[in-house]
Amino acid sequence: MPNRLSLLLTGCALLLAACGGGGTPTVQPPADPVSSVSGMVVEDSSTGGGIVTTAWAGGAGQITGKITYGSGDSATTEAVTTGTLSQDGTFTLDLPGSMDGAKLHAFTGSFFDVGAQAQADSGTTACSGSPTLSSASARGVMLLVNVEAARNGSIVPLLAASSGTSSQSAGGFQIGGLLYVDSPVIVGGKVVCTSTYSGTQVTGTVTYRLNLAAGWNKLTIRESSGATSLSGGANSQDISLTSGAFPTDQWLFSPYTAPIPVRPEDIGSPVR
Image (cartoon, rainbow, N blue to C red):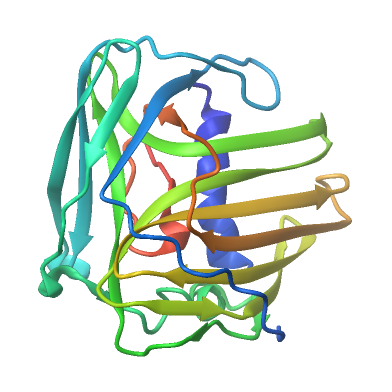
């Protein structure tokens, strides 16, 4: 898979961590929690812009779901579920019925508040607004799904679209994630941030529309962007977080080792 896919997936984390007000968006009713997920692993065969998916060529193997808990030097990664990957890339992964409360993260600080995280990470980022939570006591944890076969790496439900040339482009993506919560919680609101990257001002808006049931919830992060010349001008990203469904049943493979997603903005941010 070309490096640009790594950059695309990493962009999910960067956009949410660096561009993350006012207003209360409409939040849909909660979907039922899920007990398993199914899909088909695909690969990217394109050599130009965008992504062209092709059939999985890594053979049969195992699918593993992992979480991380704790922080800093005490952070621990743990496999919590495994499933079988078929030769053609199809799989079903059963999810744990419940999670140990000691391994869950409080929904405080920067778990959802990407504006606070962005300003902590970069003094050049200015943000306004913050997400609102219906319950301050809810806790949760994200799941990373890995493939272990003839080819090893991480997989995420992902749709991507882009257009333009190397110096002028616009596009976006939709990426899925799995979030466990120990009690129902609604996350709404908006965060607007501005920053400067390589001389270009970037404005990002993150809109939260999460209505989470107790148990495992499917998430979709949608990002749409507009850009002028990469050497200057204005750029914008509009990002929304919704719950209840994945954007696709095709899970795009990345050969890079991915950090375990602790927060929603960490979904699919592989590193070498």
